[in-house]
Image (cartoon, rainbow, N blue to C red; front, side, top):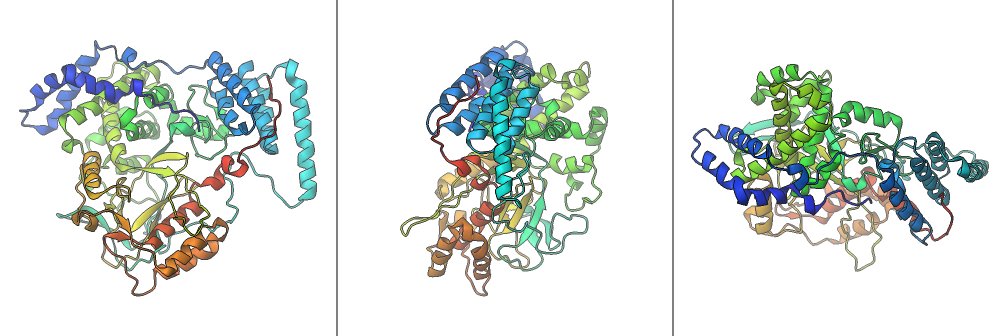
Length: 611
C-alpha cells in the first residue's frame, strides 16, 4: 500500500477545535442560542465562518497548495524504489515507489525511467503481458537513447518467454490488462433470487417500502425469504478509493492493476488502468475535483467519510452538464417528501431523477450540535474556496452568487449524507485453520466508500441482510438469516460488531449517526455475540476455510441454514450466518485472489532495474 495522504499535523478538525475555543464558539453561540427559527441556524453559522475566513490564513495553517507534478520528488521516490528492488524480498514494495510516475511530468525522462523500472518488476514476476505494455509506455514517454538497448533486450526476452509459454499451453488465453482477474473457481455470477420490480429491475418484487410513526420509512418482505437469497444488485451513485490504494488500483473501475496504471496529468493522486477509464473518470467526476483532491485527503482527519461528499458533488455536477441554473430551478421546485426510489422508473431514469434519490438521503443536520455543524460548515467552506480557486467551477461561479451558493450547499449536504450513508468495502481472506483456530474476519488494504441510492434498510446490531460488493462495482444485498413474510429488513451500521460492548456501541451509534438503536441486543444491554457452534457448524467451518472447496460446500451450508425449525436468536449471531456472509464476500467481492501480493508473495531473486 502507498503512504497515507492524511496528515494529523494538518487535520482540519484539529484546527477547528482550536479556533472554536479561541474565538468561533463565542461568536456563534451568542447568535444562535436564542434563535427561534432553527432552519436559520446553518445560515447564521455560515455567515460567521465566511467572515472569519476572509482574514484567517487557512491556506498557511493547513499547508494547502496546488497539486503539481514535480520531477525532483519523482526522482527521490524512484531512487528509493531502486534500493528496494535490489533488496531480497522487497520487489513488490519497490513498485509503490516506482509509481512516482504519478508525480513526474508528462514526456519527461523521469517518467520514462519509472516506467522502465516498473517493467523490470513485471519481468521478475513473470508478468510478461504487463511488462510489454509498460515498455510501450516507457517508449511513449521519451525513454532515453542511452538505455534503449537494455529495454530492447528486456522486450525480446519477454517475447521469447511468451512464445515458449504459448507453445506449452496452446489453449491458454492471455490475461488482458485493465480487466478484472477471473476467479480461479469461476463461481456463477450473483443474480436476483426472485422476480424483479417492473420499474426497479435491480430489486426483487417482494421487497416493499413501508412507513409508520414508530420506525419511519423501512423495507419489508411480502414473502418468506431464505438465507442466501439475493434481494438487490445496484451500482452506487458514487464511489472512491482509499488514499492508500491510489497507486495500486484504477480510480475509476477500482481494478487491482498496479503493473500497468497510467497517471492523471492534472494531479498526483489518481491513476487508471486504461485511457478509457481515465477519460470516463474525467467526464463523470474528476475534472471538478482534480485540483483539490490531494489537499482534501491531507486535511480530512476525523471527517474521513465526508470526502465522499466531494466525489458525490463532482459526479452530480458532471451529470447536469454544468447547467447550474437549471439545477437551481430543479432543486427549488423539488418536493423532497415525494422522492421515492421505489416509484421512479429505473428503466427510463434520467440523471436528474437519479440524483434526486441521492439528494434526499438523510443528513441529520437538525440533530447536530452547534459545534458539529459549525465544523462541517468550516470544512465545506474551505473546500468550496479551493474549488473556486483551482477548478473550472471558479469560472462557472464567477460573479454569480447563486451558482456559488449552490456549490456550497451541495458540498455541505453531501459531506453529511456521506458520513451517514456510505458503505465501506474491504478485502476478505480465507484462512486454513487448525483444530484450535477460530475463523476470523481479515480486512486488507483495498478500501472504497460507496454512496447507495437505496438507504431504507433499518439498522440493527443483529442484521438479517448483508452487503456483498461485487468486482464490477455493483453491490448485492443478500439475506443472512431466514426472514418471515411481513418482517423488516435490517442492516448493520458500522458499530454493530462483536468488538463493542453495549454502552460503547450505543454511544458510537448516537454520536456518529444520531440514532438510538432499539434492536433486541441493545434493548438487553448485552454484547453482540456468536452463539456457540454446534457440531454441524464446526464441520462447515472447516470445509469453508479451504477456498478451493468453498464452491462445493457453500450450497450445503445454505441448505442447512434453511432447514425448517432452525432457530435464529434475536440477540445473537449464529456461526452459520457469519460463515455465509464471509464466504460470499470471499467468492464475489474483493479478496486476495485479486491481489498481486497474494499471488507472488516475496521474491528473493536479485536483479537490475533501469537507471
